[in-house]
Image (tube, rainbow, N blue to C red; front, side, top):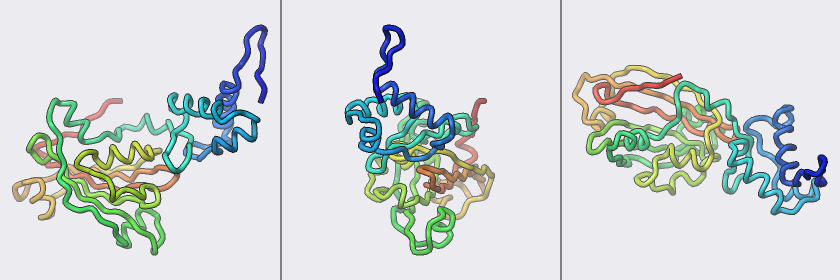
Length: 238
């Protein structure tokens, strides 16, 4: 890859590489969610320095064309997800946006070989999933019961995180941003565990959001979020 000239204007090598990456995406040769070649491979293929390749990829990340995942590689960002009706937003952000204080109480954080969970996450029967149950508080009022199963291949360090300092959603969006999701919203009666965790009276219904999220080309997480109907509303704009 050589520096090209158009009249008196030269096209820097890093810009040519950026154009090449965009062309590969636009022509469908690289698909949304795919991992691209490593910096070393690109430097070798186009006879560029690692510094030049790094600059090109770094700028594409800042432009939301690529997503870097530490320890895994660089992926094509699936920007189609940005137009979905329900935004994947941290409950902590929602609470803080109202000027309130968020805190979490961890009820469960473990590995599991639960067959339904493995099937939902499309993991083999011999695989491992992670399971967490966390109550989120708006000031001192419990507002969400989060029951989450996580793909251990996508988030191998999940159990090592401090989810009182950072929510699972914030951690996962930082490590492997969502490429897509499917969700279901229902009104349901609670079981005793959820009712006690959310300090709800018997008979009060919950607004329940179940969401299955994809990242790195895999099902990354399956979460059920319980909200007391009297303390929560779901809204959006399109």
